[in-house]
Every structure is written in C-alpha cells, then in structure tokens.
Image (cartoon, rainbow, N blue to C red; front, side):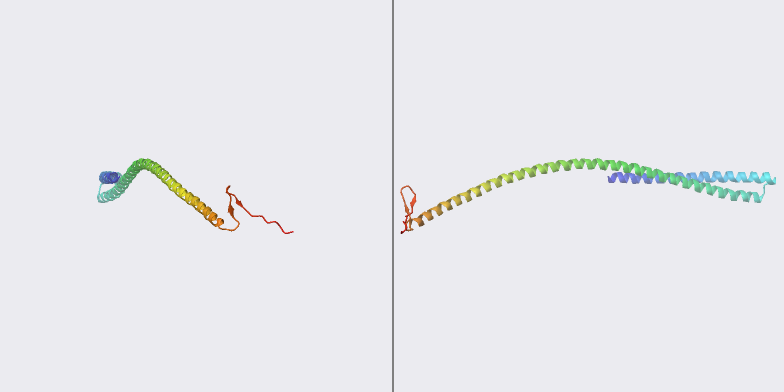
Length: 189
C-alpha cells in the first residue's frame, strides 16, 4: 500500500513538473507571438493613420506589445496550471478508487478468515463444554452416590440405635414375628 502511495506521489510530482515546463514554454511562445503581432499591428495602424513611422508609433507599439504579451502569457500560464491541477486530481481519484477496491478485497479476505476462525473456536468451545459436562456428570454422580450411601448408612444406624433403645424400655418386647406387643389395661369400673 505504501508503495502505491509513493508511486502516486512520484507520478503526481512528474505531472506537476511536466505541466510547469509546458506552461513556461507556452508562456514564452504565446507572449512573444502576441507581442510581435501587437507591435506589427500597432505600427501598421500608426502608418495608415499618420502616413509616417516615427518615435511615438514605436513607443505605442512597444507599450501595447508588452501589455498584450504579458496578459496573454499570464492567461496561458494560469490555464496550463489549472489543467495540470485537474489532471493530478483525476489521477489521485483514480488511484484512490484502486486503493479502495484493493482494501475492500483485503477486508473481505480477512472477514472470511475471521469467520472461519470463529467457527473453529466455537466448535472447540462446544467440545470443551461437552467434555466438562461429561466430567461433571461423573463427579456429580459419584457425589450423589456417596451422599446416598451415607444417607442409607445413617438411616440404618438410626434404626439400630432406635432398636437398641426400644429393647431396654419397659413394656417393649419383640415377638418372634418381629412385631412389638403393647400391654393393654382394663379400666376399673
């Protein structure tokens, strides 16, 4: 990209120098031509009007030649410079469009790469989450089993303690069927 910009600047400088050279050449040629034509025309008009060619005619011819020559030369110079500026601006716009197109293509390539990388990372993340979930399932299952076993053991121990305490209470007897008998009392009437 920097190379294209340097090339653009070099081309713009080359066109500017060429325009200046052409403008100066046009100024010199048109200035002398207009000055010469103006001087000859002034001398001819002076001769036709006075029938003589003298000092005042040459003085008027020189003054008009300088004025018209300078005016035309300045006009040509400004016109050439304006043409050069327009050409340089058109060239810069053309190069800018080319750079914009190249940047757009590069952005599209980078966007495709980013999309592919995002898909790859997403798939990897899904795989990692699945593995984590599977591992947590084993851990939770193991913890649940341990808690269930501890709870079953605690219930069994509570049952043993209850049975041991109940066996020492008066009036509590275990029958052969495993059922406890409760003594009955008859009311006094």
